[in-house]
Length: 183
Image (cartoon, rainbow, N blue to C red):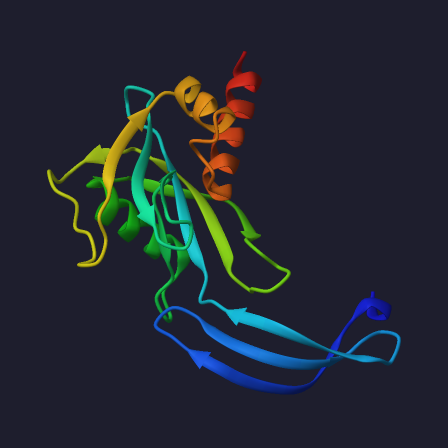
């Protein structure tokens, strides 16, 4: 695999933000030539598949400025420095939805946009869901609507492109597969 590796020659931080850092890296290509790469460094994130006792998928609807539209997503959030993904997942589930869970099962981790970012999302399945709080405990700049939808509704939302978000589409696909395997 080393014949595919790019080696960083020079690295310059162009921007340091609250969530991401942007670097410009000069790299040596496998053929000896050089090129530049714009790389976003991200602390990572979690996402949670949560199913209520009425067999509804817990989702949130929120405005996403980068897309200039409202998206429907499973609960998710950014890892805090030094925080374990499971801790983040429990916190984000409760903050965004008011639900807590008895346990979390790690499902898979995946990169969101490996062509230019190192963001790694850890996907969990929540077990033993309980609605412990009436209100969400959102960050002060976060506004969401809570949704509880059936798998069939979620499938239609993916097909109708009402669910655009990759982690949420992945979660719906996972739940579809689980449902097929139970039959």
